[in-house]
Image 1 (tube, rainbow over the protein chains, first blue to last red):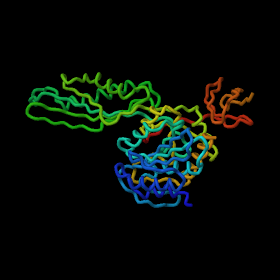
Image 2 (cartoon, chains in turn yellow, orange; image 1 turned 60 degrees about the vertical axis):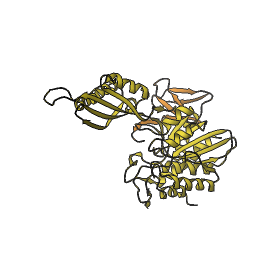
Image 3 (cartoon, one colour; image 1 turned 90 degrees about the vertical axis):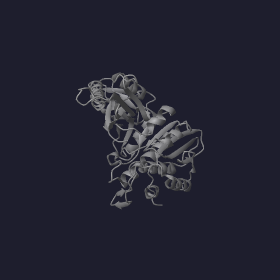
Image 4 (cartoon, rainbow over the protein chains, first blue to last red; image 1 turned 135 degrees about the vertical axis):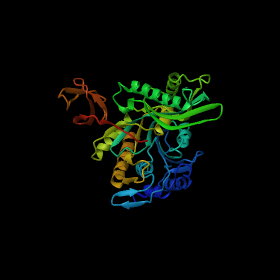
Length: 351
Length: 56
């Protein structure tokens, strides 16, 4: 058996968000061949269940990638292909590791290749309501010897400012000028909030993602698209409240703040539980020196962890610096080590 | 009673009876986090470094 067959099979089936079907069908068949009870759920996720016990470990990876097909080819120990890192590498690792451990009395391993993670996480939102695991492992690239215990939250908003039309010689502030002021107010607020925060994980990280403006004979308007990465202490609702208060948002004053997309709160996992211990021992068993990592991005863990309320970690081989780049590749030796780590962790966890 | 020496400050630490491999304990003298890496004989190392990284 080719030990990289799951990984290469997934990479061969290019599956950007919204076009995952072929990869899902292939992975389902692959999992069935490895001994899983495998099926495609109502959301279109590939699901494989190993074992029939009442206690459950859910291993949630994602099968979709960003756009941009990369030729699948091996150069030495490096395997190139879209999703090799984000996140077919971690997903394939889950499939191979749980298959190696096999069915364990009293337990079931549920491996999910979720769809749409790179857009609105439809697959994970569906899974969140359907499982109640004892332990959750989420698949994202964090290198084979690191365990991610934190992902920041995320919230998007549109800020719209309206003004009556005025003559350009009047000296009145335009809607576009007011929008610039609004962004500077947001920056000033964030700078004050961040002043005593020692880590990126603890800070508000705002980005201005878009500006547009327009006018007709009677009115002018300007709109900002503002994204923010949230720390644990600021929920999406609190962020929106802060924005509204800061900008004196009200329809009467011509300022509107509207939430956009799917806001998610930050997540931080505990590091002193049985799940983390199993991973620490697993990494050391492969000669590694384990490290914890806190990420400034978001992942499906932000969606499922608040619902599942169980010990959780984010794990997977690959260097996330290669996420979404045209050079995406994975080191096969790291992949092999990650499968060994995860198999050891699952065995310890269910022992 | 299993005792270990803190690698940071050399304090003698007594592990609790139910200690597990992989457990994070805090040195009562210097406050550093330690990982229990073995129980027979007992051993500890400095707990994993905490890093920050970007990425989804």
